[in-house]
Amino acid sequence: MTNVTPPPSAALDAAFFRLLSHSYARTVGKPLIGAGQDAAWLYNDAPFAVLAHSTAADPIFVYANRTAQRCFEYGWDEFITIPSRLSAEAPNREERQRLLDAVARNGFIDHYRGMRIAKSGRRFWIEGGIVWELTDEHGQRRGQAALFTSWTDV
Image 1: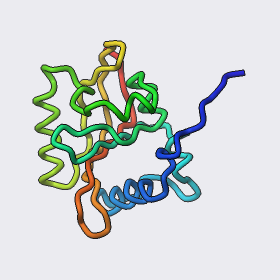
Image 2: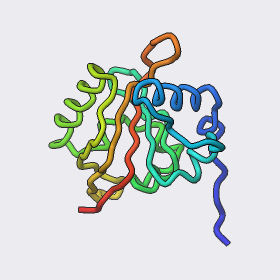
Image 3: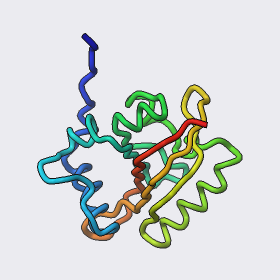
């Protein structure tokens, strides 16, 4: 039997889940999750990866569901200490920054495809990506988030 670590309380935080799901619905125009699904489902069981980073000058990851953790090979405690720029190799960081600037201007982008790097150095393409601005109900920017539905090792 596999020992599964329970999710950290921050991963199930109701206010953050509301920010994530409501900003996605407002910005992208469709729900992030289906009826009957909740923060626990998104964190533990979603078949797609969801990540979010802060508004800091060098943004730090503040959320990564288990699918994202498996893709990038970091556990929660390590993931939430990593500057999000390190999810891409140095040569790909300029392209990543252009993407984030476009998201800041336009609210979101979809059909994103980009090269990323896991903790082990394994490179992979993320595909079917949607990246959106995390904004609260008052329009205050709280960070950026990404969802991707598939990934392919290089």
